Image (cartoon, rainbow, N blue to C red; front, side, top):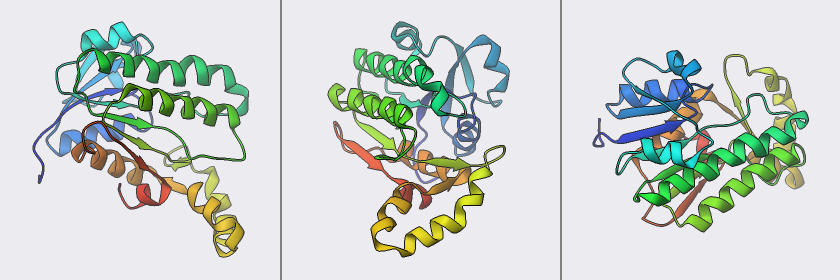
Amino acid sequence: MSVPPRDVFVTGGSGYVGVPLIRKLLERGHRVRALVRASSAARIPAGAETVVGDALAAESIASALKSGETIVQLVGTPHPSPAKAAEFRRVDLASVRAAVAAARRSPPHPFVYVSVAQPAPVMRDYVDARAEGEAVLARAGLTATILRPWYVLGPGHRWPVLLLPIYAIARLVPSLRAGALRLGLVTLEQMVAALVHAIESPPTDGTIRMVEVPAIRAGG
């Protein structure tokens, strides 16, 4: 590989994006540890170290972190919908607050956070929770990459393919083009590639890099 191996600490590693990301990081020679609930430990790919803990508790994360590890924050409510507004704050926002608080206790920890495309005309509670997560990162002064997908296509997550003709038309209308690009669909493979790039090529110390949908499609 072209970059030296990195030490990576993943929260939410047993999920839809986390499992393929860990596999790809291991394939590229990185050392990966994943913070999981005991009930989810079996889902972590072989080769990664599992750390049983609570991703909503800063103390649990801080006690597990090792010096210099890149933190990848993937915890979130599965299959977001407007009916899950309370969960977005209880899980999504609480988890990034906990991870950031833990990272500030023993810097430096490059931070990678999966947010959501914004502004957006729907899913306001979800977008607001993720935007608050971004603000938490900004106030902390950490070196961070924030990725803003809208919907990640992959196994079990393919229904938005039906919207592709609408996206194609919107991109042709000048007043709709920017929104169509910002709220475009990305594949799971593209998302994983963009995350790997964020881990392997962190921004300058103390700065935050934003990665929008077009850049995710390009692999970061």
